[in-house]
Length: 192
Ligand code: URA
Ligand code: SF4
Image (cartoon, rainbow, N blue to C red; front, side, top):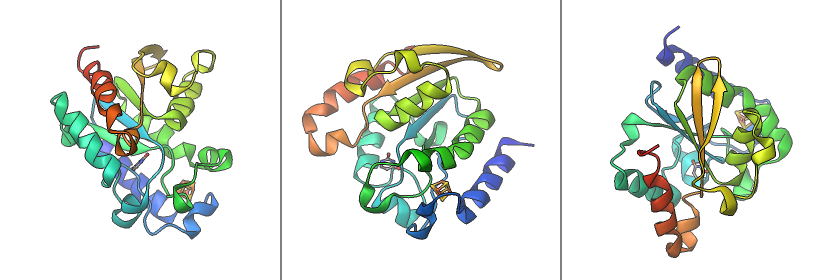
C-alpha cells in the first residue's frame, strides 16, 4: 500500500477513535501533516486549542515558533512530517496521562513504520520519553534540558534512525530567551 493510502486510513481511524476518553472532549482529531516520504519526522506532545479547532498540528503560537525554526535551517513544512504523541487534545492542555499515551501509541507507531524517517526529532519531554523508550534508549533518557541537541543512533530493520531530542517550541512563547538555544538545536538537524 502506498504511504498516502496508509496515512488516509490512519486519518479515518483517528477521526472515529474512542480508544481513550479524550474523544469525548475533542473537536477534531489531529493525525499529523506533511510529506509521508519525509526524511525528518517531528513529534510533539498533543494538539492544543487551535490544533483541536483546525484538525492540524502546530498551527497556534507554538506552531509559529516552529515555522520560524524550520525557516532558520531552510526546511519547509511540505518537506517534513509533523505529528504528536497524542492525536486528541487533553482538556485545558493538561499533561497526557500514561494510559492515553498507551492507547494512542498504535497511531504513531504506524506513522513511523510508514514514513520510515531517517531522523526523528522529539519536541519536549513527553515525546522524547516515548520515542527513546520505543527504540530501547530508556537507559539514556534524561530531562530535556540535559539531552536536548544530542543525537542517538538506533539500528532498525529498515536502517539507522537518528533520534534527536529538542526543546518544545512552546518554551519560547513564554521565554523568548529560549529562541536562541532552540535555533542552535535546529541547526544540527541539517548537519548530522
Ligand atoms: N504543542 C504540541 O505539542 N503540539 C501541537 O500540535 C501544538 C502545540
Ligand atoms: Fe484515540 Fe488517541 Fe484520540 Fe485517545 S487521543 S481518542 S487513543 S486518537
